[in-house]
Length: 189
Image (cartoon, rainbow, N blue to C red):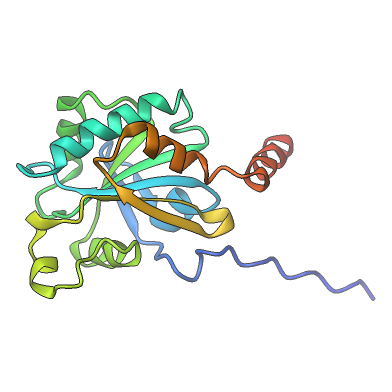
């Protein structure tokens, strides 16, 4: 009789994060959990393309963060901007936004079904405790969420904080365990 197989451990976020299919600014379908979050260090913000408020400043600040991460974005740190207005922010609209803002590759802008984007927003904690303020999409939080799904470590900081401070916070998620997991995955490939 063969020995019993060990059960594969459930990833920390697998039971928490939804796995909705979203579309990138390149109109590529991706699953929120499986393709974007699982086993990764991520930086996430909420935005919309025709924002006259905080979004342009946040995008500009996150461009500086991306540059300071020295080529790690898209390789071992992943940046995602999720729309708050999917009914307006089609993949084409997001692609235009990316081009207009000269966003370098490796940073995905994402849209999806309104109800699903709302679930993701809430799961990530981009909510205002005041229901009236929360319902007003022009008053979004101005935070970024960053985390290491492998270790189930998550934090947030103001999206307009000093880029160097944001980079240090993101890099604090890259622990010895995560580096070992990346080395193991590279060796298996």
